Amino acid sequence: MSVSGHLSAESKLDWWRSAAIYQVYIRSFADGDGDGIGDLAGVRSKLGYLADLGIDAIWFSPWYPSPMDDGGYDVSDFRGIEPVFGTLADAEATIAEAHALGLRVIIDIVPNHCSDEHRWFQAALAAGPGSPERERFWFRPGRGPDGDEPPNNWPSRFGGSAWTRITEPDGTPGEWFLHLYSSRQPDFNWENAEIRAEFEDILRFWFDRGVDGFRIDVADGLVKDPALPDIALTGDESAYSDQDGLHDIYRSWRKIADSYPGNRILVAEMWLPDMSRAAQYLRKDELNSAFNFDFLVCPWDAARFRDVIEKTLEAHAAVGAPAAWVLSNHDVTRPVTRYGRPGDTGFAFADRLHGTPVDRALGTRRARAAALLAMSLPGGLYTYQGEELGLWEIEDIPSELRQDPVWERTKHVDPGRDGCRVPLPWSGSSSPFGFSPAGAETDPWLPQPAVWSEYTAEAEAANPGSVLELYRAGLKIRAEEPALGDGELAWRGDDDGVLSFTRDPGFACVVNFSVKPVSLPDHEEVLLASGSLVHGLLPPNTAVWLRLR
Ligand code: GLC
Ligand code: MG
Image (cartoon, rainbow, N blue to C red; front, side, top):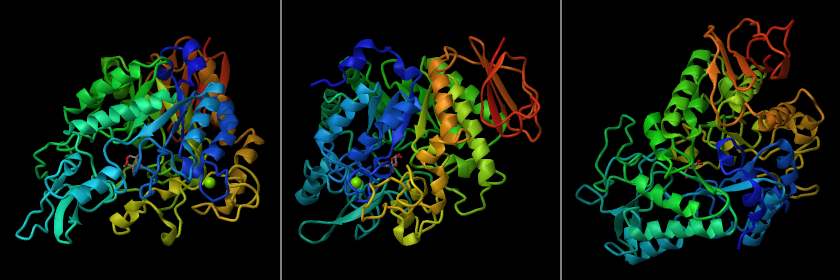
């Protein structure tokens, strides 16, 4: 079965080196059946919108059956579709329709863990200590005289311990299992050959159905030090992150991807401290690309941005891989909010600055400028749904409606990620803003603010000054300009507070991070600006693209 034929035949082999990829978080994108939750029928109704936006591919966050403890990153069956989203036939139709519009499709794969409702975890609970079923996970006896202390001191990335104790089938307090995320997300044991074979088969299952690639969730975490040693709690994750054994796994995955026609790709999600180590995963027989999170977390400062960009390009050039620039995703505070915090110090999970004052007008100006910067850097680009509407983080979601497990696991210290997952506004003047069909009886699964009436896709499409129109114009130029996408850049000077670079042939981008207007280099034409120029000068918090003479 191959539904991707027409794309693979004509298209550029290295499409992914320059691609603009749009992330769809299905639950919050568009609701076709009116139950208040986004679904594949909703996605299919908006494929035209995505094609008009000027992107090359869609990345779908997990669409598998899931109890939704972690928004679908807790998968109970890797070969199916969550019934709330639709059916396998709906997914196949989505892929085919996207392809017909010239859009490629990347899906999420979650190999580090599954849901506690996955049949293998249920079998492990039932089978008891020492069984082959338990060997698929990390089950260990506890420490202390009664075994009531966790086997080691690893913390969950969602707060609390990374271990949970189970009750054995005979009713006695039993072993503990490892979960780097919530206690409903048991980690697979990748030392076990069965796990390796299973995931290779899952890759084939979806490649056979025409997907063009995978975004690999927690790509750094699959392999653990099998001794499960205590760690120094200084942020050093080396016992369960970036272990050398990962490279072999990804080499075998790359062979599978390359055995399919049409340049299928593998993209890593990894938040690693050392960019040169991260780049090792992008050697030519491993993964195609990896998100650049250093760029995402960078505070609004010219020198800091320049440093991140230089280091990124250098580390990627060393292995011949393109960079992949990201400003937002379903895990982080939206850029308008991040950049609108006074004294912006960049983004860190430990310090979301949730609820502190935001200058939204300033944040929007900066987010617009950052978008033009990201679109014009060498390599690929990821845009998270709603970023193109200039949406901001919704920070006043009532506590009882919060769904992210981070909120409970941190004992209400970290509000979690619901604020960037509020269902999108499409049209109309009141909630559900076209997210659900007219007359739907169920409200969107998270409440939408009333002021979003001015931020619907419909309202923004009619407004030339909107963020949507900036994204459309920028992505269109990006697709047509030979200078943009994959390639190189050359810095122009190093004025304080200004980032300025050229790309051949004949293109320049200037971003003003300073507090004063700055003059522009000699140019033939202004291609696009994130805000109006004033007497030919570039105002603060603004970016411009120029055609050079
Ligand atoms: C990744 C996902 C995040 C999820 C976590 C556990 O970081 O992006 O949403 O919670 O993995 O699967
Ligand atoms: Mg629905």
